[in-house]
Length: 136
Ligand code: CO
Image (cartoon, rainbow, N blue to C red; front, side):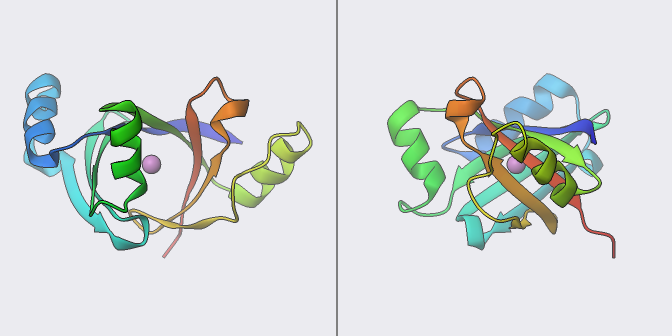
């Protein structure tokens, strides 16, 4: 089951600058904000907790980052929407029956979560992510 919009991600050129603006916009306190580097995805991210969802700001780490390529092609803006599930494998099996296949096997993303992405061609040209928290 999809239980929540986990986060909405925005690609930005300058994370610190964007974070200041989104802090001003949301009124988020410092304890609602988490900044993290994800070398496997070549990004630096900031998560701003907004109710039960988050806004994720994505800054490229280096010119060969997928986010650098996105910014080059499309400029700053909406990058993906992440839907939360408690069981990513079951959800992938469910969507496969609807001819919606993820772009790869689940991998470990920011915040030590299992993630997969779907082809934006299938989803209104918006990249969609499934995310599952890993219990520790
Ligand atoms: Co994400």
